[in-house]
Length: 476
Ligand code: NAD
Image 1 (cartoon, rainbow, N blue to C red):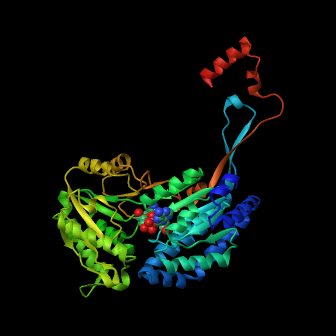
Image 2: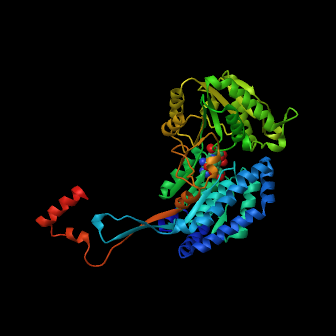
Image 3: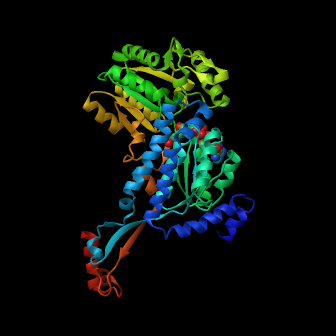
């Protein structure tokens, strides 16, 4: 760290830790791929051996059902570690690339090197998964890391801290728990990379702080992910899949289906099927089956989501299913709303809760231009049996990722880059793409000794050199 940086961070309680990691990160450059794989195996084994602990802390944090924890917090982490262990040698191998004729005799390759000391800031909604996946990617790429879990899920944050201190020395990976102030103190340090997952509003703060040190960033943000059900869609299939995608984790998923455009010709059928599936999947004896349904994470978010429901009523929208809430349990019923004006809060804000607005449409042009007026979504879900319509939607609507006749599941394929566009995110993660996010792709050109083609263009710039240069400027 230089003198200016030292002065700037003099009062920062994390400077010493940062310095220690800086020294370690230099040592890690000399490490082997085998060592990185051993660290990934340690993480994988710890997670595999401690499923019950992970299930318990997520229950304590927001009563997340066991199957949802296994499916969305544990399995993706184990699979990501396994995928990285399996592929790391290939990912990290220098890649030969072509060399132009003007550089005849030279060879070119891309070498990946660790970025160095990384900061990973995570949200509360998948509090284990969303800190562990970037950690796996950071370690696969040979970095050290400081992790800042969300303060809103304290049981999970503590478990992550316990796990990390059992598996790593602080100079390699360290968890720092704390609230906004802690995150802000960390953000002043000159990290080599910051991987942030959270809201677009905080993403801007993170990017501004990173700019002061010219630190690279991956921003995994959120926003409104739309669904389109066209006139050719298989309605039962779409309804069943969307009920799961929306109400899993009580709607608190960054890529949750946020609102649904339904073609007018199938609107009523779709609405009926949705209601049937919600009742079948989430209700028992006329009541929400509490064992299979997570809660809203805390009172603040409970108030935020119930105030969205109040707004639905105020602006003349219709609660077509659900709509009740129980403050002492932070429980909000799976809810469908219809007839929502575009200016309503559920159509303007990221819902991040179990409310699903349905919007009737007549022509796909209306839908395309309505989505285009909003910030580019993190995910787009299209339900259709028409190849032509599907190709059009993939081509014309910008989005971080698309699922056709499905929701959420593009997240689970480690061979697909995951991330948003502009307001929904900057940079990509998962598998090789995450490895690259935490690596510097270093260009290496190796030249031969003695005569090289470029020497023909050295000064003095005689008439012949000038002619030759004109030829290559035109043709090569
Ligand atoms: P958040 O942005 O409020 O908080 C995320 C993290 O940032 C937390 O660790 C928090 O302590 C920290 N933080 C909060 N305010 C800060 C500030 N002023 N300065 C520095 N750090 C600060 O997000 P959240 O409420 O935890 O999560 C919900 C949001 O995250 C939603 O918008 C959701 O769509 C998004 N999200 C995105 C992804 C993705 O992969 N793209 C995944 C999950 C959640």
